Image (cartoon, rainbow, N blue to C red; front, top):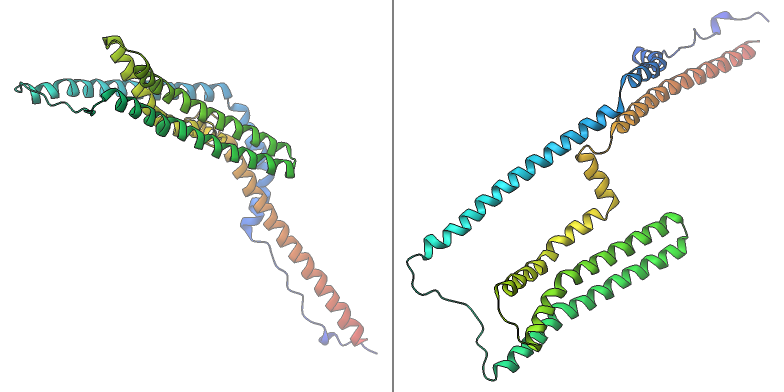
Length: 278
C-alpha cells in the first residue's frame, strides 16, 4: 500500500521559551560569580563598627534630649506652685481624720490595705502563674521535644522574675506602713524621703511589667536588635535573591518539561497516523 503523505499532519507546533526566561537562566550562573566578587569586597567589621557608632549617637541624642526635657519640666514644676500660691496665707491640706479611737481605726486601715493591696494580689498572681507553669509542663510531657522543654524553662523564668519584681517593688511600702503601726517613727527628713522613695517604687512596678514582658521575649529582642542595627540583616537580602533565582529556574524547568511533553505527544501522534495509513 502506498503511503498517503497528504494525510500526515503538518509540522508539530513547538512552544518556545520566552526571552526573559532564557536571559534569566543565562545570567543565573553569572550571578553567583558576581555575588562572590561583591562579597569579597565587603568588610564585615566596617558594617559592625558603623552600626555601633550610629546606635551610640542615637542613644546620646536621646539622653541629651531627655535630660533637657526633664530639666525644663523640673523648673516649671518648681516655679509654678510659687507663682500660683505666693499670695496665700493658708494652704488647704487633704488628709484622713479618724474617729475615736484613732489608733484602732488607723491600725485596721493599714492591715486592710496590706491584705487587699499586697497579700491578695500576690496570692492570685502566684496561683495563676502556677497554673500556667503546670499547663506548659503537661503539654511538654506529651510532646517530649527539646524545643518544648526550652520554652517551658523560659516561661518559668519569666513568671519567677515577674513575681519577684512585684514583691521587691511593693513589699518595702507595706513594710514601712506596718512598721509605722507597730512602733513609733520619728518623722525626720530622711524618713520622709525614704517614704517618698518606696511610694514611687511601688508605682514603678506598673512601668516595669511591660519592659519585663518585652525583653524576656526572644522575638522582641531580635526585632529590637534589627531596628537598632545591632544585628546584621543582610542575610534577608541573600534569601530573597536565592528565592528569586529559584523561581526563575523553576519557570525555565517547567517550560522545558512542557516542551518535552509536547514533543513526546506529537511523536506519538505521528507514529499513530503512520501505522493507520500503512
